[in-house]
Image 1: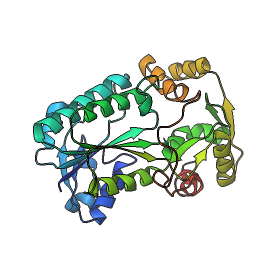
Image 2: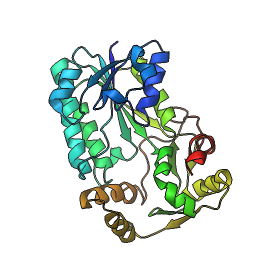
Image 3: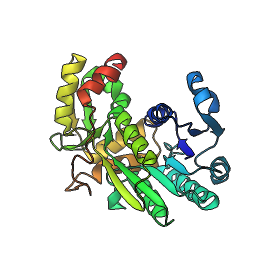
Image 4: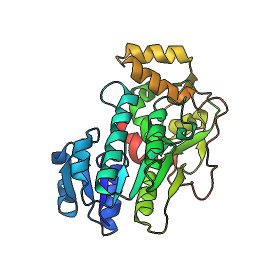
Length: 289
């Protein structure tokens, strides 16, 4: 099976690439920056320059491909929903033009709402478009990435993290490496077909209050969580230079999943993955903070 991996330098893609290599696969890496692929990987992968927002480039890059691990790249235009739409157009065009029969898509908890979850609405639209192709597709509905805490390093150093979510409200948190392991087993497993949804929920649902307790213990400093209002968060984002469409999309990911939202897939052995927040903080975050 010829397997293509998009965003191979991302939080999930960098782990997935190595897992596939260890499985004996030589993956095809689609990247805008081929020169950034680690030298130690080069004899074990094929690399092609392709922008995942450019349909023509993705079509050309995926000729002869049997399966794709598809990620909509992080927004670069300031309008995340528009960028998700461009990425959706690209993977749909490639699947149609090249007869790609299998796609594993990195989606998110909340995509099942289809509308009203900010940037996650862009992932929902990709799910809908892939479902319409009549191919084998698995949507990985991932929890909140541990790595999002790396964007809070300055706040952690000052001891306070802000959120618009109730501090005691639990939600799924997950390590990107665990997502990569689920992605690898899914793309390599020949025994599924049709449309599937696979929750990737981490080892336990955590509230921000529980997260702050873990951070306090492992970082050796007090970390408090502060709930602030939606408008205050929006104003802070805009003041930091974030374009209005991006601020709205990012805020909507929290507000849209805040009031009574229940994920389509309940936590089970099917969706639970092993890496704990505590172990991830010890491995990754302690050195950064």
